[in-house]
Amino acid sequence: MNWIWLGLLLIISGGAMQGSFALPQKRLRDWSWEAGWLFYSIAGMVLFPWLSVVLFIPNAGEVYARVGAAPLALAAVFGAGWGIGSVLFGLGIAWVGMALAFAVIISLTAAVGALVPLAILHSDQVMTSRGALLLLGLLIVIAGVALSSKAGALRESAEQRPKGNFLRGLIICIASGLTSPMMNFAVAFGDPLVKEAEKAGANPATSSIAVFAIAISSGFFINAGYCLWLLARKQSWPKRIGAGNILRTLAMGFLWFYGMYFYGMGAARLGPLGTSIGWPLFMTTMVLVANFWGILTGEWKNAGSRARGYLTAACAVMILALIVISLGTRA
Image (cartoon, rainbow, N blue to C red; front, top):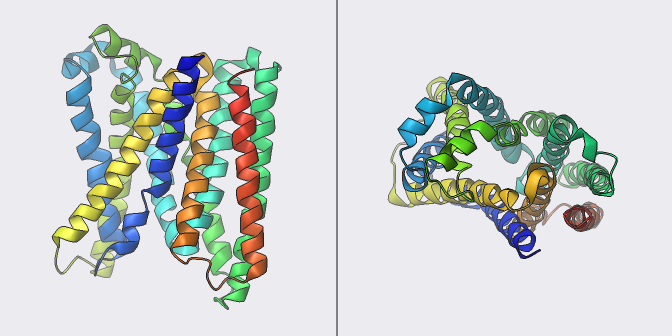
């Protein structure tokens, strides 16, 4: 039981970190979105993942050589799919704001990311009480998406934004929500690589970094390629780098990557269903924290009382989903 509660704490901590990762982006000075996202991608998708591999995976080169090409290729393919979702995630934040983008994208990611591993790897658990609680939690999450979407539409009307902006942003968020779960697929189906790392002496709590590093680095090329294309097309290269901007993008990368890392450690402590139960718990925590920061930084200041009411209702629904999914770990 203590291991389960420690796993839940790690997952919630990781969700809080990831829910906060975009906050420093609001403080970037004289940088375009694509410049900030490129530097964040270098930090969060290359620097910190491979630094962690060096620190936590003994003889990492030999581990990757012994596991064979197939597991590495599978992790890379899922990582590339996640990379597309990551680019769309950044664009979604730019279009509809931190609070709403997180609510829509992460809720969809939670639903898809939990159901696929459960259905494929643990189909016998679907009809048990644990599976029922998980499915109920996912249905509640989807209700939260609907409430969040209504809140966004009301905000667009109250702030007299050009019509169609919210719809365009919502489509981007939905597309991100359908592709972002591929990171969880990389973890769920990356067991051969994790076991090989453990044979080499890696701690079971940190061995999943061997999978994360491959998947995230694969996704990096998608993110970096898109940002470089935008920088070249718009000629929006930074006129000056600035130590403050570098530190802010390093903070973004640190919060994002180690939030995911804490999720991996927590999921390992929840047993065989860690990726199915832990993933929506991680996602829901992320949504709540991002909504908190979005409100605190004034994203909804001029949205009107009805829009803020729907956003509050969406947050309440997400809390309910968090409780139901957490109960699933004890069923």
